[in-house]
Image (cartoon, rainbow, N blue to C red; front, top):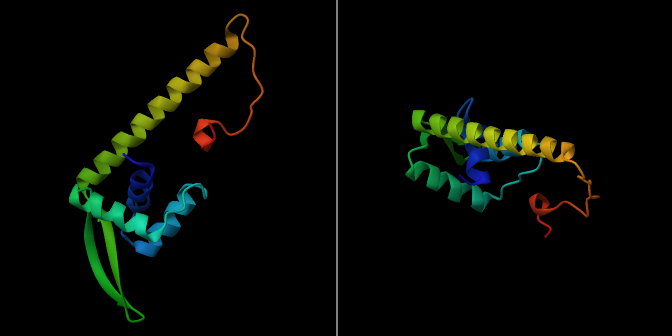
Length: 122
């Protein structure tokens, strides 16, 4: 599951939302780390709909514009839960290895040269 899909599903976990509401919620739940563009969002929504993970909940006209609200399906909630569990297990394994590495004889902590791979610098 992509990061964008994970956060869109997370944004929809508690209630249906329209596109702009999803964008704001993704930014909030990711503490600003993920800021989706509109084109990216609608591509993700199309994929998640095709995969049966979300459905169109309703459409409303607001100030002359159509708002489409999306909600998770039961399958979407299961997929989100499974991905969250997978990520938590991976984080736990990494923390365990880090702790073991710090205890290893002769282990020397190297100063960080920057954000590393997670930050996009190689």
